Every structure is written in structure tokens, then in C-alpha cells.
Length: 423
Length: 106
Ligand code: HEM
Ligand code: FES
Figure 1 (cartoon, chains in turn cyan, brown):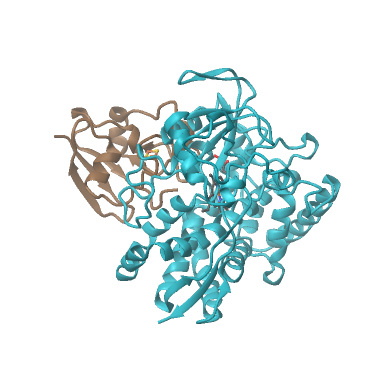
Figure 2: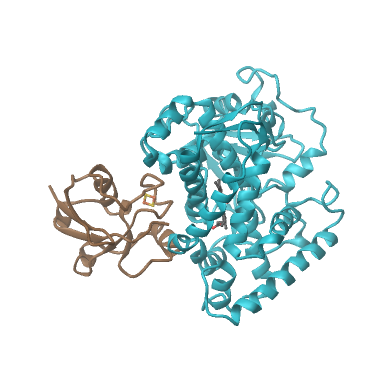
């Protein structure tokens, strides 16, 4: 999910960057977690620890994207997500408010009861029962990518594996024309782009491009509707009792949500898995010795990476938490990246331990009614990938500093230089 | 010590001794009963501790609570026997309880 935030902040002066400052002596009021600087520089962890210790309900009065609250402790994030009546997902889950004229209806940014109705109509396609049917094709595509990797010479893992694999998986999910699969990633980027930041110049332009997306999918829809039901998402929607008559805008919103939701997040988890195992050779040894640890390693990697650093909520009324008063309309960022490092909920949270107890109890997928709908799909992709990497490669060695994305929302990589060592 | 029986989707049966103070979820986890993930650790916030209460036990166990209902409602496999097992406290009255596990947690 590359966001408006990311693109907007690209244009802001980096005067408020915390890079190079002492996390333990910087005045609390100057801590602006939403500034991408410390995230790109990989210096964010001690700032999160500082807020967890000294100001777990923290107000940043002045930032490039306006005032906002930061919630950094595990239990507080859990508690707030439960109270959807006090903390709304509308109008959006990113820090920048959308242009009200161009909002696509997506249930991630809706409250009950609308949210529940919409999620229920589409979630069957990514439920485990359906994923079982998709797994063989996904595995076949994983194998093909791995079998074509250069051996014993450096290449960018993000480009050659993570990006293409996620795009291919989306194409598999939609049974989208395989050769045109890059359109999916393009539409995902357009849907989240702020006009003027590079990709599109105006909302009218993105509307036009997304209209093409809708047309393309409508055609596929017609074609699938006239055939017997299949396992792919479009076929399921076209034949489903509750989805057959979905209005076009809602159809588009749901498609975009699935494309956006499963794109950067999975890509960055795939890259993260290689980096984490490289940095923790003892854990890599454990995995090689016992491949049944793959599912547990996948969960630990997703915690360690936390591909989305936060989700936003908006207060529906004045609420008092631990002596702080959050005012109606205030923005609240729930920092999963911090909750996942909270020692009071997760022992040795700063370490990467692939067989840790309660490994699934992290907050990377959020929690409560908006808990990631694609979580099983994401886990399956990573599991299948590693089931095929282990028999082929002794190691995927990282040979350069990772290049991180300039964003406080999407935690990920542009570049990870690696050498693949076959057995 | 109340005894609880879990029947997996494939018919595999596990009978465990639970303590008062356990939940039907935590008793399963402690006794390594497969088929319950409990991703939120009992917080009624993930829905991955879904079970089906056998009909004869439904009057004793009761229906879902205020925060449980919306989580359950989002589960594609939900039926009128569904409960989140982390929201069922083990008591002496539940001695002999039988629950069935879904094929998948989601
Ligand atoms: C490791 C990969 C992934 C991570 C870390 C992740 C993270 C998240 C998070 C944190 C949320 C919660 C939103 C909120 O509470 O406001 C969410 C929701 C969602 N995710 Fe994912 N996601 C991942 C993969 C996927 C995939 C592969 C899909 C595609 C099917 C997907 C689709 C969605 C959808 C549709 C929602 C909205 C759920 C709702 O509002 O009820 N995600 N995701
Ligand atoms: S353990 Fe998460 S809802 Fe029961």
C-alpha cells in the first residue's frame, strides 16, 4: 500500500527529521514518528521505545501532515481497535485525508455495519478453503522464478523475486491475463497516488485510468459469468449470491482494495524474510535443520518486518485515555511497528526467533473487525516460497546495505542486493 | 477438574482436563490440541479460536457476547453453534463439554 502520505511527504522539506538525534534526550514534543526520515534511515526503533516508556499516548502538535496522536503500546492498540464506536476507520486509514470528491468505496475505511456487509461478500475468495485450490498454481510459479535466478552473482532480490512474485500471485488470484499482469501493480499505484507527485497529474487522470481498470475487469467478469464457476476471485464474485449484482463502483473499490492490500505488504515481507535470515544465521541453521519451522518462521518474519507501520483511526467523540484527552476528530496512529516490539506483550521482542512461543500473536495484521482479510494468503505465499527455496539454495546471501523506502507507513525496500548459493 | 472434548474436522478426538480459570481456548492450547490458532491470545479480537458447540451443550454454554458477535459474524464458516472459545470460561458446569473444530481458522 504505497500511500498518499508517502508521496506527499516526499515533497516536504526534511527539516523535522529526527535522523541522527538522541532518542532518549530529544524533547517529547519534537518527536514526529510520521516523518519518514528515521524509517528510511532505519533509526526508528529507539524512538518507538522512548514513546512506549515516556509517552505511550503521545501528541505531536506540529508535523508536515498536521497534528496527530501516536499509540505505541501493544495493549493500548488492542483496546482502541476494539472500540470501533469511538475510533472510526472513516474517512481513511492513512494520515492524509482523501479528497471527498474522489473516494472509492473500500470497506477498510468503513465502520460497521457497512464494513461487515461488504467484507462478508468478498472474503470467501481469500478464505483458507479457496486458497487450498490456488496453492498448486502459485507453487508452480514460485518454482519457475527460483529456477531462473542467476547463481553466484549479485542481483536485486526485490526486483527479481519479491515484486514479480507478488504480481504473479495477484494475477493468479484474479486469473488475470498473465502477460498483462503488470497492469495490476500499476493500477494499485495509481489508486494510491497523490496527483502531482510523479505518477499522475490530477485526480481526473487517475479517475480515467481507474475507469480503464473497471472496464477491463468488467469484461473479464462477463466472460467468467457465462462460464461455470471457477476458483478465481472474479469468477467467485460473478457467481456469488451476494456479489452477483454488485454496483460497479463498489466492485472497483473492492478490486482495488485487494490489489493494493496484497501488493507492497507481501512484497516487503518476502524481502524481509531474506534479510532477517541473513542477519540471524543461527535462525537460518534452525530452519535448514527443521523445515517444519517454516510456518512459524513466516509469522516471526511478518512480526519482525511489520510491513505496515500503522493504521489510522479518527475519534468520534472526546475520549480520555490514561489522563490524555483525545478530542473529537483527532487523528490517532496505531503503531503496529511499536506494539510488535513491546516487551510487556512479547518476550525478547527485539530479537528474531523463528520458533518463539505464541509466534502468531503479533499485530502486523492489525486486530479486531478490520484484521487483515488477506493474512492467510500472505502467509501461504511466504510458506510456499520458502518450501521451494530450502531445497534449492544453501543460502541467499545479502551482499549490500538494503535500500529502504522513504515512508513511515509502508515499511519496505527498493533494493536488496543478494547472491543465491545453490546446494 | 472439568473435562473438555475437542473433535477435529477429520474426526480426531482430544479429551483434556481443564482448570477453572481456563477458557476453552487456553485449555486447548495448553494441551496442544491442534486446530485453534488464537492469534490474539484470547482478546476476542481475531476470530481464530472458532469452535462449534454441540447442540446439547448450547443451553449451558450460552450465546456469544457483545464484542464476540461482530468477530464471529465475519467468519465465513459461522453457524448457530459457533462461539469463540477464548470467550467460554471453564467452570464445573462445563464438565464433559464437547466442541467441534472447523476445518480452517480464518
Ligand atoms: C504480510 C502481508 C500483509 C500485511 C502486513 C497486511 C496488513 C494489514 C493490516 C494491518 C490491516 C488492518 C487495517 C486496519 O485495521 O485498518 C489489513 C487489512 C486488510 N488487508 Fe492486509 N496485509 C497483508 C496482506 C494482504 C493481502 C495479501 C491481501 C489481499 C487479499 C490483503 C487485503 C486486506 C484487506 C482487504 C484488508 C481490509 C480488512 C477490513 O477492513 O476488514 N492484505 N492488512
Ligand atoms: S483468541 Fe482471538 S478471538 Fe479468541
